[in-house]
Image (tube, rainbow, N blue to C red):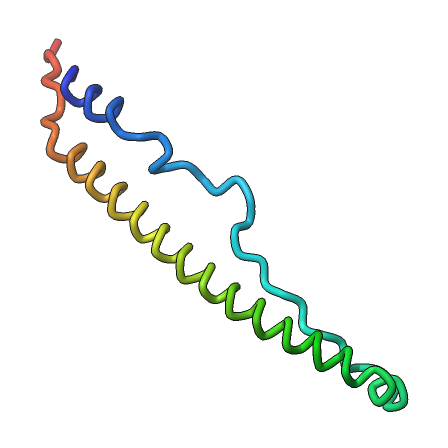
Length: 96
């Protein structure tokens, strides 16, 4: 039993830690549901908002890719830990 406890104790708790915050927040799409006169008046500002949105969206997608990679790595570590656990023979119990 002691070797099994050593294996469990030696695993990093950060490998199984849950995210503390939402890591990848999606940007908000600029509002275009406005009167045509407003859209015409603020055309340059709205265009700049869309340019910023698309740049932020690229960063968001990169963040999602990184989070996917992190989650897969965490799953590999968990799988290895579970495999090690399954290979530990069960304790022999005395029959009454």
